Length: 203
Image 1 (cartoon, helix red, strand yellow):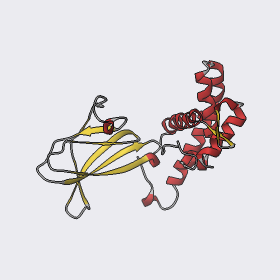
Image 2: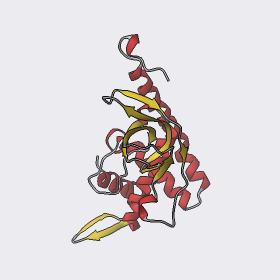
Image 3: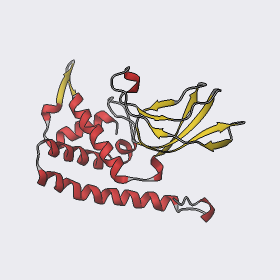
Image 4: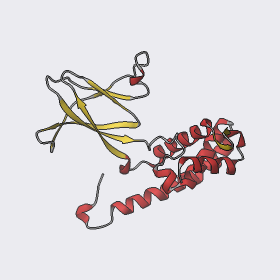
């Protein structure tokens, strides 16, 4: 399913028809509905937790440049400087850089890190734990919309209960959702342990 299909099914199953808007002659999910989708998806990303969420961000850094920014990272694991033919990587020291909300929009809502500048151009590889891609467009896809739309829709319903300050409703959704996350996590671990032992990925 794509983002629009998930959002529409959420509206139908929750009865939240106030989250529809008119596009020409058609009723479509409003920006608020996509906001629930994005919020629910990020909650699931944080609850699941798995090495598959790791990603490498490659940044070309100019001489004397001392920071880079990027989107959609939960947190940074490591930063490496690529040397030689690109096969050799050397870990470098880095630290988080505060958001500069008063400057240009290039810094917000980006994630930023700083490091020691060098006198030459170079390439950095940044290993991050990432959120799923943002799903604010009708045809956008993510792990959750494609593989587990049912779990995503229930997570959206949980987010709606939070906004209504319904503690019991939140708990009623959260217990089975966490159980679903545990089953998905178990499947991922089983997949990683498949095949010859030399291919096992031990964290």
